[in-house]
Image (cartoon, rainbow, N blue to C red; front, side, top):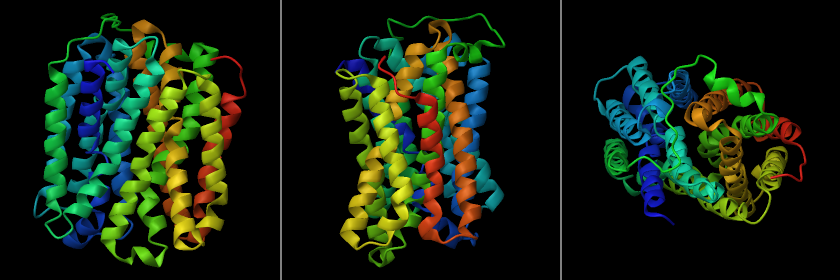
Length: 383
């Protein structure tokens, strides 16, 4: 692996640890600030909403294409780390907590999609492999706060906040000194329709809509992993809950790396189709396995954790390969923007349905995304 890609992967891992920092300490936040038990979905959704607002503005003004992506990434990492620290304020209202998380999500828009652009600027022929490692780093970063929480369970919950912000600052510092990639094509001409030009391409549309179906399921699943686990009596101990939440989410990082490597030998679209199909099956079968004995249940959850994200780097590869090169940064960012907008709908839908439907049957509705994504992607023999 090239030195530049190693730096990008580590920076991505460190910085994306901010994403679920609030989720890992949700019970502490609820107890410390006397919040409602449903605050988890609001906290998760506001980060997504901030990310959506950020990706839209970054894409609209073509920021990753006009300016050095490494500098955009670094500045975004420093600002996201700063707003993440807001959760550590002793006396804080629910509104202020949501504001801090909104801006954390806003500046994550300068990290995840911009990191993909940097990787695309360095890799051309082996982009699928590069994005496999990169998205794997995102998944590991997303899971990491749960592991950090389990290690610091006997200490103040604010250690998770301090730890993730420190990692983000380190990640931003790593990427700041990375020069622009050899395949970067700066675009200083502002065009209002630049962010949507990729949708004129049929293959781009297939990849994008397949990705949207994937996103309907992904973040709702990640957000509700602790809720699903809590249905089993073994997880009455919150420390076990944090550890297994980490395992189920983090195992997806290995799936991303493996699927990225597979894409070097087999058609990317077919691998993405199979992974999306299997994750959809997990959604539909979830009522059966949630009620099984511990090891059957946990094996199912780990398998779901693998399949739910294995297609993510593949969709990113297909989108990047079919995006117009001069607007690649803006195009990748707007696809992320739409995808994460969809996550808010699925997360809030589960919140509403939780009050009216048995929890065992709740997660079947996540299968809507994979089904529609499979229809959009379709079987194809082409790459």
